[in-house]
Amino acid sequence: MAEAPDPRYLLANERTLLAYERTAIGLVVAAVGALNLLDDTWPHVTLGIALLLASALTAGVGWHRYRQAERAIRAGTDLPSGVGVQVVVLAVIAIIVVVGLTVLV
Image (cartoon, rainbow, N blue to C red; front, side, top):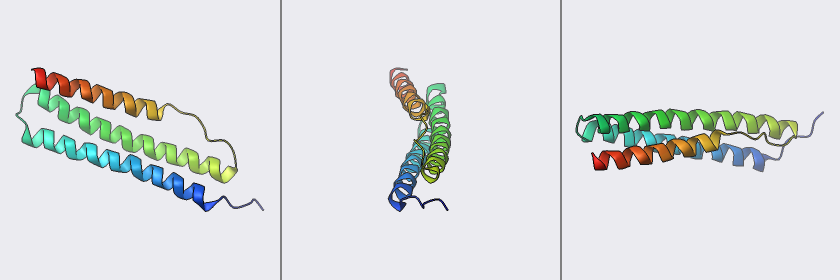
């Protein structure tokens, strides 16, 4: 019978997933604010949609990374590398650019 994984690793993995999900919730809140509180101009609507897409992306990447890490921890193998974190960072940078454009327009 395989040795049970250290619960600390499983709990750390779970905390990481929850951090992704908190970030996704924050992006949804920002999207709702942008779509409901700002003018209905194309830059503001674009910002709201970008925030919603980034939220979905963040939640999906977090879940995918959680499942990858869970499998690796239970199998006792190295954690797989991935580009999920980089994709989320690029999405946030893109939103920063969109926010900058909405301020300028």
